Amino acid sequence: MDDGEGFYMQPELASRERAKAADIDRLFCKKCGERFDADEATDDGWHYRCPNDDCDGAGIGTDLAAVTDVLPSTR
Image (cartoon, rainbow, N blue to C red; front, side, top):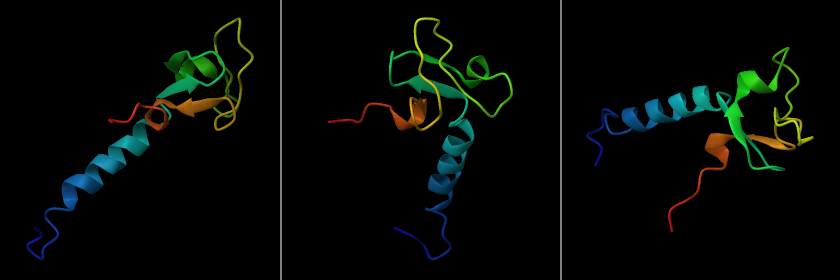
């Protein structure tokens, strides 16, 4: 229940901000299933590709996704 001051919304907003900041820290390759640090996947901070030598996955949103976007949901 909100007391009119918005105190109950603050923790939720803060946690969303932290999740957004962490989005690019860890990536998941949709082609091979590997998870890795974003720093391993880029040389220039603009183009990303899977660091697995046996995989040709590339592009955030195409073959690569932020780990927070692919976490399993509870059933």
